[in-house]
Image 1 (cartoon, rainbow, N blue to C red):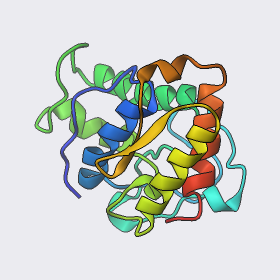
Image 2: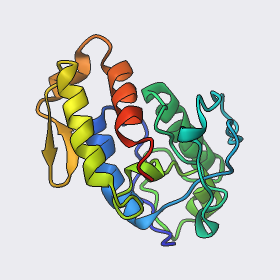
Image 3: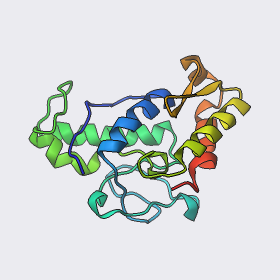
Image 4: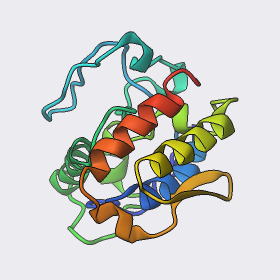
Length: 181
């Protein structure tokens, strides 16, 4: 596993940024925690709604926090907040770039939120099928989406302001990717 950690992503919203960041992030970092339905990273969590969304453990990645397919943007933001809080507590000044050589980054590496395994093209052989299904589902809900460079993306960031956007994103993500990894 590479220890490369991209700059702070605190406050990142919307799937376009999340999907764009996930490609690079997931190639460098891939992990998940235990198969239980709750997380133990010091923030509130929800139970896994079904076994199909449960995580698997890969030895090099054990102990890392992983974003789940059914996490909404508030859940994702809480995970990033926990990571940035850990960095601050370990001496990284707010606003300073998190680089691998910084002791705070090394101390907080297990709190760095990784994308769902199902959304990792390197670990999911049916990733491109999930991308096409995601685009179809989002378009069916009136959120104009496209396949862009092998990932799904919104045609316009304005779609993030549509009513129930986050609900549809999570629903489509689970429906499109849950059985792919």
